[in-house]
Image (cartoon, rainbow, N blue to C red; front, side, top):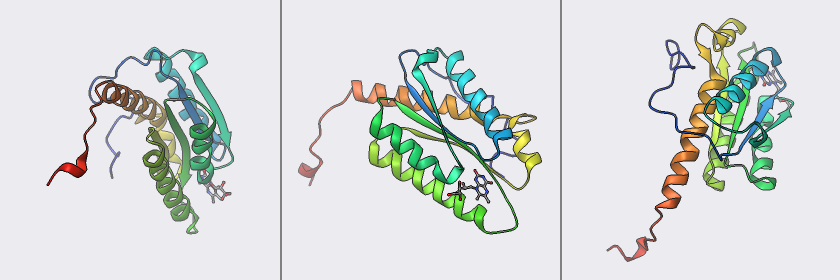
Length: 174
Ligand code: DLZ
């Protein structure tokens, strides 16, 4: 399993300063016991790396399936540099799990590529509540922390590349 041994609150590589960066967070109300903790982790991490509290805008949506549209609202109506989507889908006895996971993954991917804006996937997809608790401030850290660090890194990368932008007409290559 991809994250079975990883502590999500211990980051690979250096996390740049988040000063002057602005973030939107969309959080699902479904499984709030988990997503509320992801939210706290994300906010604490953004602030820890220098983001001003006033530059963090939080909006709630009913469930994980609604996260991409919530993120699109940020893209459309605000000037945030990145959006973090936070949710928790726990495997049940029906195929709802698959549909929600597929919907949010494809939606978030399509959104960030369309808008050329980081949309960071802070969604836990677990077999049971215990696995989710382990990744929401438990033994394996907090997925919200990891999502926030990723968002900061991606905004820094975009800022750097925009600052060094060169214009290339790729059609002239033969
Ligand atoms: C319906 C549903 C189910 C069964 N499970 C979850 C879940 O584990 N996590 C979650 O965030 N949301 C769940 N939902 C709600 C859907 O995400 C969505 O809000 C509804 O299907 C309405 O579109």
